[in-house]
Image (cartoon, rainbow, N blue to C red):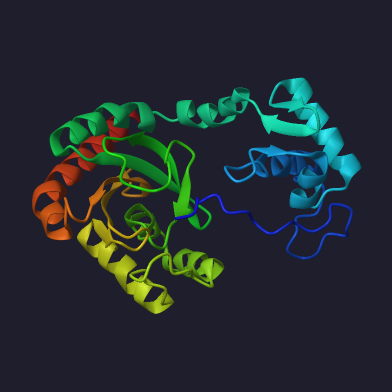
Length: 278
């Protein structure tokens, strides 16, 4: 199975005139800052090191523009170079930590998730919705159950993951339609992946009604995942948490009978703790 960090197609050339779909520079849009973030995002598991030309190609910037941004990031300590190659430094994690530390949810959730993992002896994660993907914000692993390595910041498609469908279930109908339309065409990750938009909407509606979601072998063959929402005091879904396991060890029926009550209790505990803090 390939990494979830597949390369996005190159952006439009930085010197090209912006079109209707591209934000125009102005009082509310700082183009140079956006280009800098684009350079940071151009590094991935498939491109941990890049030459200046590769960064320019991936971001749509000119070589001169890419060079200025890379040297600025290097001066700030977020990028380092060795010969012709540039790479991110561990300091880049400060940006993600600022998000994690700015919300009480993650500090509250971690001990609850650790206790859940101790009970079920399977991995548990928490994620939020970002664009067409879920982004992992907490993970308490046990067994290595996937062919890809997951950690904080990992992204997976929302449409074929239990946490993704649970998060999509928390959206207003018009926003859900917009998100699903943006995912098209929907890729079949395995022979079991549901790719029909109308059927996906039915499964998401079912997750909304029952308050949990289970997905079997749609992201990766042999992988089963069960998720529940974490909600604020108004009932809005802020995040989702899951238990994931292998089909031969924890088939869906076993997950629903044994794991679901424990998962729902853990998600409710985190939700109540969060509501007391806000």
